[in-house]
Length: 216
Figure 1 (tube, rainbow, N blue to C red):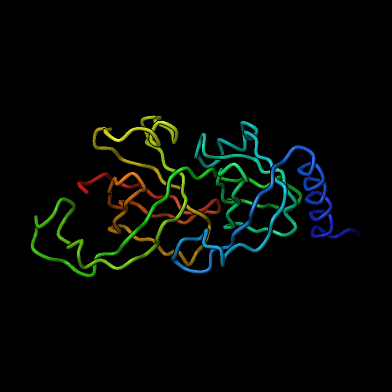
Figure 2: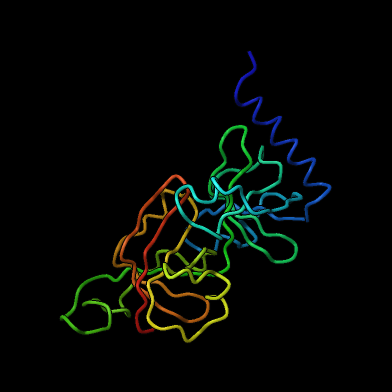
């Protein structure tokens, strides 16, 4: 009887052959610590890859909307949590890589950093509830992520708008248990916006955060 692993590799090798025809040169990175996962030391593979909008069911299951894409590449070498950086600069991370299935990826248009305040100070000392930003320690630095708002403002609008009213953001990060994000962690993005994590949930598709915007 053919094993699931053998069948999966056959499917993924087939995706790799298709990617050689329709894909672009893509670098694969595997995060190793809290620093920027796209550092050169984390690059472990180059392969052709293509990305397309997923089937409706795959996109809607578990939410996430426009952030999810199906990846066409040889997934025999990759695993959930890896980043894929296409030659044109597009960035995705692998959210789900189920046996005998097309990998489900998340497009990451923002770069986010997170910090953890070291302790409380007097109430009202800052805009988000009694901890000093200057005493915070780094949790993640410069991580590509998906970011949107519940009001249906997607990543593209957020990527170009710098004067949105105070917002609550939905953030998706790779499915790596060791990231260990917590409510109360502070967030900044590559446009200089700041927020505080209200909810941090680890799911089979990755970390899902609810972040409330605060003063920078």
